[in-house]
Length: 103
Image 1 (cartoon, helix red, strand yellow):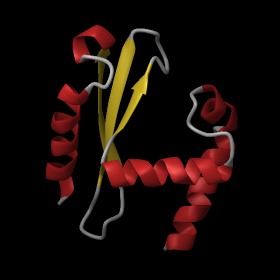
Image 2 (image 1 turned 120 degrees about the horizontal axis):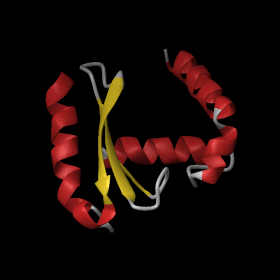
Image 3 (image 1 turned 180 degrees about the vertical axis):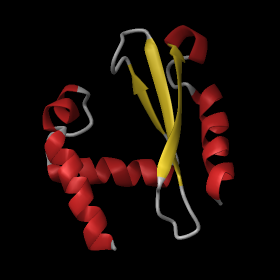
Protein backbone atom coordinates (compact mmCIF):
# COMPACT_ATOMS: atom_id res chain seq x y z
CA UNK A 1 0.00 0.00 0.00
CA UNK A 2 2.69 2.52 0.96
CA UNK A 3 4.61 1.68 -2.21
CA UNK A 4 1.47 2.26 -4.29
CA UNK A 5 0.92 5.63 -2.59
CA UNK A 6 4.50 6.71 -3.25
CA UNK A 7 4.10 5.73 -6.92
CA UNK A 8 0.89 7.80 -7.21
CA UNK A 9 2.51 10.80 -5.52
CA UNK A 10 5.51 10.57 -7.84
CA UNK A 11 3.12 10.60 -10.81
CA UNK A 12 1.30 13.65 -9.43
CA UNK A 13 4.61 15.41 -8.87
CA UNK A 14 5.83 14.58 -12.38
CA UNK A 15 2.58 15.71 -14.05
CA UNK A 16 2.56 19.02 -12.19
CA UNK A 17 6.25 19.87 -12.08
CA UNK A 18 5.97 23.41 -13.46
CA UNK A 19 2.91 24.21 -11.35
CA UNK A 20 4.69 22.93 -8.24
CA UNK A 21 7.49 25.43 -8.85
CA UNK A 22 5.26 28.33 -9.95
CA UNK A 23 3.01 28.07 -6.88
CA UNK A 24 5.91 27.62 -4.49
CA UNK A 25 4.85 24.12 -3.47
CA UNK A 26 8.15 22.49 -4.32
CA UNK A 27 11.12 22.47 -6.64
CA UNK A 28 12.01 18.78 -6.22
CA UNK A 29 10.58 15.43 -5.11
CA UNK A 30 12.00 15.60 -1.57
CA UNK A 31 10.55 19.04 -0.94
CA UNK A 32 7.19 17.92 -2.39
CA UNK A 33 7.01 14.96 0.03
CA UNK A 34 8.03 17.15 2.97
CA UNK A 35 5.32 19.70 2.18
CA UNK A 36 2.67 16.97 1.92
CA UNK A 37 3.84 15.49 5.23
CA UNK A 38 3.53 18.94 6.80
CA UNK A 39 -0.06 19.30 5.51
CA UNK A 40 -0.86 15.90 7.02
CA UNK A 41 0.65 16.95 10.36
CA UNK A 42 -0.97 20.42 10.41
CA UNK A 43 -4.32 19.13 9.21
CA UNK A 44 -4.66 21.98 6.70
CA UNK A 45 -2.95 24.01 4.00
CA UNK A 46 -3.35 27.67 3.12
CA UNK A 47 -2.54 29.26 -0.22
CA UNK A 48 -2.36 32.98 -0.86
CA UNK A 49 -2.81 34.37 -4.36
CA UNK A 50 -2.12 31.02 -6.03
CA UNK A 51 -4.64 31.50 -8.85
CA UNK A 52 -5.76 35.07 -8.27
CA UNK A 53 -3.99 37.85 -6.39
CA UNK A 54 -6.93 38.51 -4.06
CA UNK A 55 -7.97 34.91 -3.26
CA UNK A 56 -6.98 32.85 -0.22
CA UNK A 57 -7.63 29.09 -0.22
CA UNK A 58 -7.75 26.76 2.77
CA UNK A 59 -7.88 22.99 2.37
CA UNK A 60 -7.92 20.06 4.78
CA UNK A 61 -7.33 16.36 4.12
CA UNK A 62 -10.12 13.91 4.94
CA UNK A 63 -8.75 10.90 6.82
CA UNK A 64 -10.57 7.57 6.81
CA UNK A 65 -10.48 4.88 9.50
CA UNK A 66 -7.21 3.48 8.04
CA UNK A 67 -5.60 6.94 8.32
CA UNK A 68 -5.51 7.19 4.53
CA UNK A 69 -6.62 10.37 2.75
CA UNK A 70 -9.34 9.58 0.20
CA UNK A 71 -10.14 13.25 -0.39
CA UNK A 72 -10.13 16.78 0.95
CA UNK A 73 -12.35 19.76 1.59
CA UNK A 74 -11.50 23.34 0.71
CA UNK A 75 -12.79 26.86 1.11
CA UNK A 76 -11.68 30.03 -0.57
CA UNK A 77 -12.49 33.68 -0.65
CA UNK A 78 -11.24 37.20 -0.87
CA UNK A 79 -8.13 37.73 1.23
CA UNK A 80 -9.50 40.75 3.03
CA UNK A 81 -12.67 38.84 3.94
CA UNK A 82 -10.84 35.71 5.14
CA UNK A 83 -8.48 37.82 7.26
CA UNK A 84 -5.20 37.18 5.50
CA UNK A 85 -2.62 36.43 6.70
CA UNK A 86 -2.84 33.97 8.37
CA UNK A 87 -6.53 33.18 7.69
CA UNK A 88 -6.77 31.49 11.08
CA UNK A 89 -10.44 32.35 11.46
CA UNK A 90 -11.25 29.94 8.62
CA UNK A 91 -8.91 27.04 9.43
CA UNK A 92 -11.05 25.49 12.16
CA UNK A 93 -14.30 25.28 10.10
CA UNK A 94 -12.49 23.59 7.19
CA UNK A 95 -10.56 21.09 9.35
CA UNK A 96 -13.69 20.38 11.42
CA UNK A 97 -15.63 19.56 8.26
CA UNK A 98 -12.83 17.27 7.08
CA UNK A 99 -12.66 15.40 10.39
CA UNK A 100 -16.45 14.99 10.64
CA UNK A 101 -16.67 13.58 7.12
CA UNK A 102 -14.97 10.20 7.63
CA UNK A 103 -13.77 9.53 11.17
